[in-house]
Amino acid sequence: MLQILCLALFGLLTGVQADPGALLRLGMDIMNHEVQRAMEESHILEKMAAEAGKKRPGVKPIKGLSNMKVKDVITPVITLNFVPGVGIFQCVATGMTITGKSFTGANMEIIVVLNITATNRFLQDEETGLPKFKSEGCEITLVSVKTNLPSNKVISKFLDSTLHKVLPGLMCPAIDAVLVYVNERWASLNQPMPVGHMGTVRYALASTPTTTASHVQVDFSPLVQQQTGQTIPLTDPEEALELPEDYGEGSSQLFLSAAFLTAELGLLQKSLDVKIQDKLIGALPPQTTETLADFLPEVAEIYPKPKPLVTQIKITKSPKVTMKSGKSLLHLHGTLEMFAAQRGKHPVSLFLLEVHFNQRIQYSVHENRLQLATSLDRLLSLSRGSSSVGNFNEKELTDFITDYLHEAYTPVVNDVLQVGLPLPDLLAINYDLAELDIAENALVLDLKA
Image (cartoon, rainbow, N blue to C red; front, side):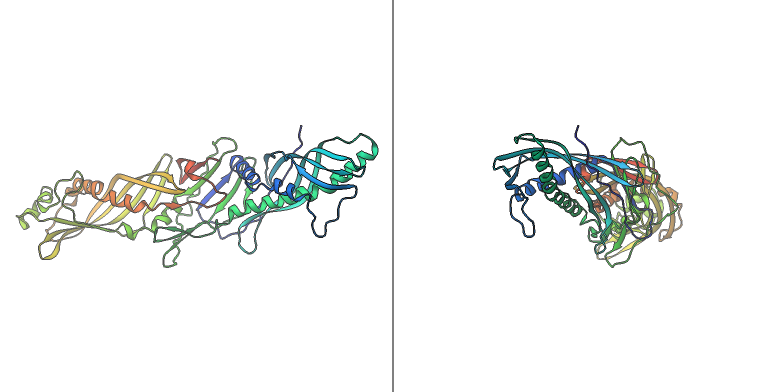
């Protein structure tokens, strides 16, 4: 049985004070996929083999061995294991054929199966602040050796000496090169990512990653900045993330808190203000004073002839996202002011209402951006702020306003949300493959390798 290569991984990352933001649990599936892909896509073992027979400055030729070449490199087998409180143990096995002329003058062929053992620390780059791997203490363990040379003590000693000289210099640089390749997969992590033209989101590291028996946990304290540079703070710090543990062994998850999504949607608040003056909207009756008079008879007295309606909606408080298991709501507080349009004159304000309503949110991922689509859930409150048509009971408008928000305003909200919200750019994770679930105070993306 092939022995295993163990690469110890532990975190030493510092960041800003943690807020209820985002959390990533990297399980064995993602880690295995990333390391295996790095080894395969970099073709590093083949490159090292191609360089093996070349003369390199400062490297002395191996005594008793000439015309050395390496071929038939076996595709490495990689296994990972988490060690709680320490990091990750990565286990790799490979093999190759070494050819050349031995000290006897005979053509030599050595088939070796081996493990490379190294300790790789997960550190924070002092210049960039990004996480990075660093290899330490690389060693080679021979699993089996076969050769065409005759078997005797002299040959055995020669093989042992030759392999211990050749293999570390050949294979250990491969570990460093693969780590460079993996480190590049973190390069874009702390870059600001746009939310339309309204601002940016940056996934700042919040605390030292920790290792459990099933995953590496990385905490983020995302920075949400308006186009002006002003930061939108994450609210409700008392609402801690409740992380489910009932996911498949080895799986990975990204948790996005309701507070974080609230801050991101705060960037879009001004885009939710709208003036609607279409006469025909969806399944609504014609938007005229005549239709409005069915709910407020006072309007018919002032406008006996129908006038087109113009509606202006302004969101006066930052949108807020709430989450309970299986359900997420977008709370919107604002004003709805309705005008009667007059040819050649400025529209006349009929009334202004203070409104609070909920939109139910459905989440999806497209092109690695979180997509939100909403539908009207409830009109929670309605109060009159001003009126030019006299005193009236605003409750009489409940059905009229509810239908209006559903048919006229929900499409506006969904159009604004099409911009999508950026997800952490690291390890080339394909979020489009994720399965989504709504937990207590958090959206969960169950990631797939």
